[in-house]
Amino acid sequence: MKTAVFPGSFDPFTKGHEELVRRAVPLFDKIIIAIGINSQKKYLFSLAQRTEWIEKVFANEPKVIVDTYEKLTAHYCSDVGANYLLRGLRNASDFDYEKTISQLNAMVGDDLETIFLISEPQYSHFSSTIVREIIKGGGDPSPFLPQGIAIPKR
Image (tube, rainbow, N blue to C red):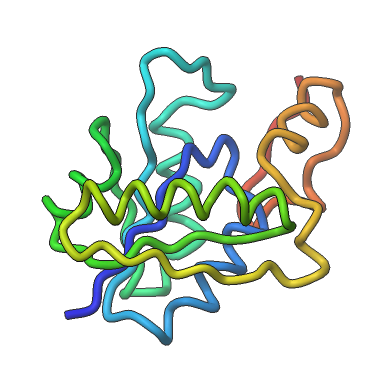
């Protein structure tokens, strides 16, 4: 079984994330959207809220499941039997960062291969960081969020 893990904090999950997973579905038997938990990081949305949103987005896609983890991503992949990491690239900066991480994961993980998908142009400027700033500033984040994710005004 070809299993891929798509790791991230997904705070919040964006249309860019959704688009990447939907494009990857035909490539794998199972995709685990793995929400990483970092006790040192302050999140805008609770783990339960992020999980609920992602599960709602992929409610009709049986190949996609949502999980959480607190260990090294490579170790998590080993635990769930995944040999592939799924990552998106928006620009050259993403590539430089992701290349280094993929090389480290290949050293730490057993037969762990990173699969990169280049973002569709309409999503290449999306990031959770920017969406969080829009939300914190009282703006409307809906153009950046998948259908079904509604964030109340703050």
